[in-house]
Length: 198
Image (cartoon, rainbow, N blue to C red; front, side, top):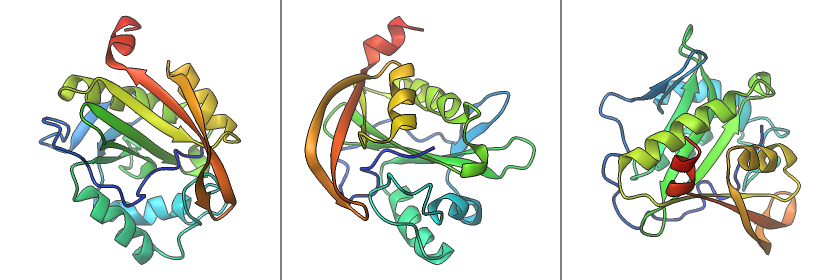
């Protein structure tokens, strides 16, 4: 599955979000995955996605050349106040997808996610994001979660709509990426909306 485009775009979190990071590294466990914080030893598995030009089509940059370049990109993000995590196979602990919740303006968090090709089409991203959204809204004074997607990223746009996000608008030529000048769809979800659908 493709991803939100704003991830890692040199933006600095605007303030701490208390309780966003779990103390033991595990955010949630479901029948099919363990959502946990990123570890350096996840890089080889994640490179299968971040190094794949097809998977990286909708990211804000081209595919990574090697694991060292990916580690330099992902590990500094993990050092910020963002919650950077993977959904791992419970049987092997191998990362199947990457997702992150990045503090932005006060009370707001941006989602980013990327699924390795061999795990796409199984509903794992929806399962992981549901657990992540539950965690974020339960962790502090977060009132809104949003995601920034490419209008042509049908899988991601359909996923966010199914999760209850509202399409709030379109920013024209908001990004210039490896595939050119791209518009952004902005999807938003309020805490009260999420709780109402619980």
